[in-house]
Length: 66
Image (cartoon, rainbow, N blue to C red; front, side, top):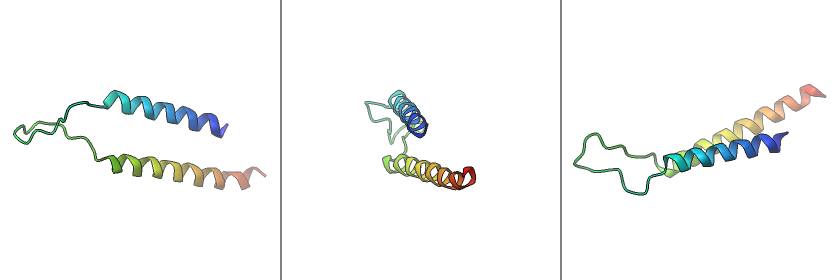
């Protein structure tokens, strides 16, 4: 069950990232409306926080089921 949820989430994240990926640099200093993507480490921290929260909630729920 956990593996299915993890794989589904991983596939969702990969597809979302590939949809928003840009090949050219969108940060033009002369354009005020240019969209600059988030730093890569922000995405890594968000994924780490998601995994930590999921693991914590899973471990907390496990003793309640026994």
